[in-house]
Length: 111
Image (cartoon, helix red, strand yellow):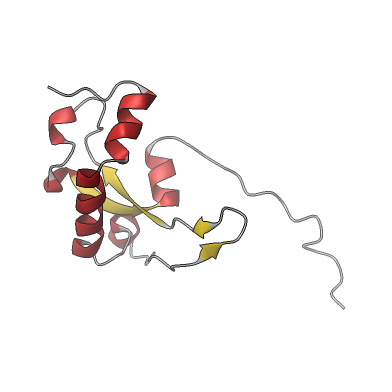
């Protein structure tokens, strides 16, 4: 059975053609909408914006393993274990929090 314990193993999986194909299939199935936002009555969709600094499309939506890849490698490509979520919901799910930098000019007088 395949293992996805190390960063290299996970990177190889996420770079694979199988993953890229199923990821697109799941986004299409979920109508390119965050399923977690949808459960809470919000709408979060892929905007198809381009990041000039990163020189690539801004990532708004990801395909999330409901049961984590590391612990359930047999479900890695199982469609029932995958759902489309926005980056914010994905980060919350994994306990990652990134506070936005405060704009020091936010409350200044506007000209």
